[in-house]
Length: 431
Image (cartoon, rainbow, N blue to C red; front, side):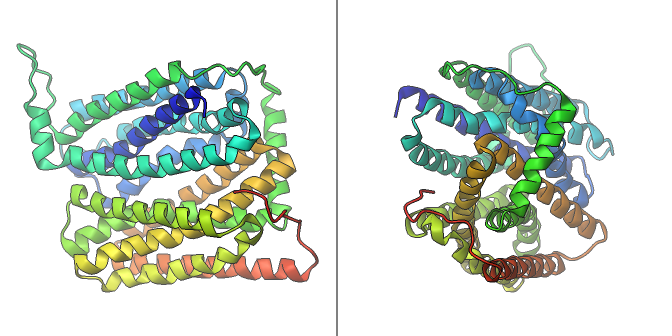
């Protein structure tokens, strides 16, 4: 691989790591401010809104200038959101009900992430020859999962009493910084990781591709985007893979918050301790993804849908768990099933999207649908917590929803098979 590829990987790793650590620090901030429990999933809701609201435009923005510059600008937006978050944490009084600014600041970080996304995927196709794309995507996906695991654990560690005590003990002579809580100290450390990512962004090689946005007319961009959405949903293989990945990302985002609440109820865990279980689940996803990548060829990707049904059933087992010795393997298993069924589906979706409309538009459609699913499922989860449903009831409803939805997707695929031959996928097509 050329040296520039490793710079791209480093930039993405540090930016994604900071994103995941920041979520934990922001949850800790809401807990410190005595925010009601249903506010916690709204953090991710506000982060995700930009992915849906600007889905038709971020691709055109990413194509309007060199991708390294796009990544630098959007990373700077993330830093700005972080600084606003820090400022409100700094001036807030514990127990006061001014949570709006926290959600707003976290939403700005989400805006940066939404605009960053098409650039980080698009630069690979510009920079590398096509025969290296499969390997490159494997590296990027693996590194992203690693950054999620390390970022979640880092966020948990930064707000843990012993680490935060050491951070807060660091003093600048003759200056009272006013930094006196674990979330404030954690956010400052996370800003450093965003800054490291920004430095790497500056050194991303210019690929020499002529950058001109296809159109600056917003109405044209919206029309073109809605045409692409219809195209992918009406494709008989595209619709199955898109439905599956859409459900996966919505379920995955909700499961993050379910695990935190479940760990508190089942084991009396703090947020810092609960992030360890999240990290274990993410490690399972990584293992499942690796196994799927090695064993499931693209032309048999749809065969993994029953694994999604099984995952929904196994999630319900969480309500019976009372010991950590059972909880850890269960988290690994749930993660592994999720990773095993999403990787082939993701590969199939990218393959169909590339054929139907090109990679850039396909990623925009995928982002739009997946993040719409995250918004819907987190909205329902917040509502259930607001209505004071017990976490065990929520887990059962969640597991049943995943099982029933995946069963409907499988039925739709069987109907498609009966209605005539499906689009052909070459047996040697890569993930």
